[in-house]
Image 1 (cartoon, one colour):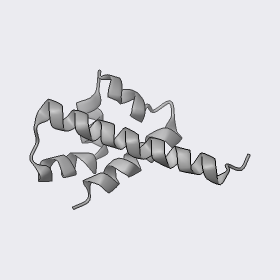
Image 2 (cartoon, rainbow, N blue to C red):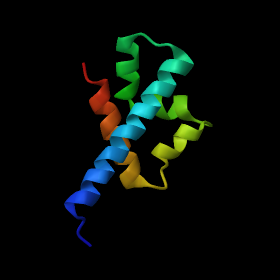
Image 3 (cartoon, rainbow, N blue to C red):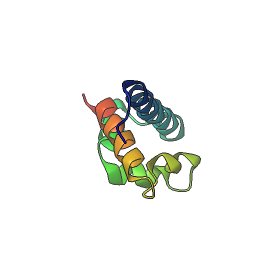
Image 4 (cartoon, rainbow, N blue to C red):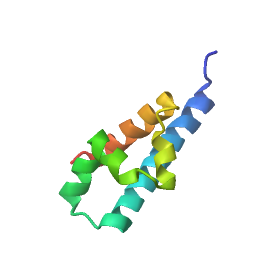
Length: 81
């Protein structure tokens, strides 16, 4: 089934908001320097390890590969210098 433009817009909004939520958690929990946070956000293994056993891990569930991919892409985008 083809997604409408509105559905695509809502998905993009979800991915971006999820990434921002994760970024806010990482800043509050770990207090990283900007360069360190940027590196984490563009390194999937770092994100997975830091979100393990938190409610935020659900955003990156391996059981939802399309969601995981969208949120990771948004994280990498936020982490670009």
